[in-house]
Length: 147
Image 1 (cartoon, one colour):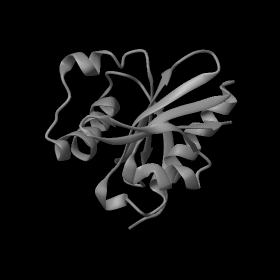
Image 2 (cartoon, helix red, strand yellow):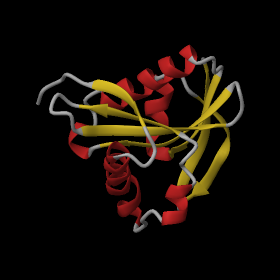
Image 3 (tube, helix red, strand yellow):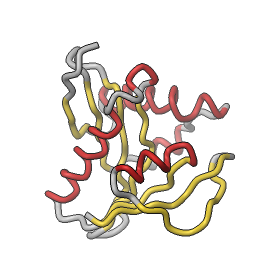
């Protein structure tokens, strides 16, 4: 498997966005018996969308930033294609998004991590905040990182 990856910001509603939604659906929603509604996707029009692509220009990982305020972004919908998990792609995606956030004046990133992802975010410098809670039917933890 080729290990060259490229980080991109993509536009809401574009073919790239549709590819990212398909990946998010496959990795995050279908395993829980869920699918995106049109209303949920329409709410993403003013959010920031990022992808990691392989050398064949296929989207292999994606995430979204929701702008909370001029200093804070909420990272959401982080997904890595199953065949690229545990190969550093998620880290490359998150680090790329953090560099973008810093370059654009943001000071902090917040997120809700599924329990199984907490260790991944800890390794990238995120810390847990508060108690465990249930979201989309599974345990999550609030996490944050000061940039």
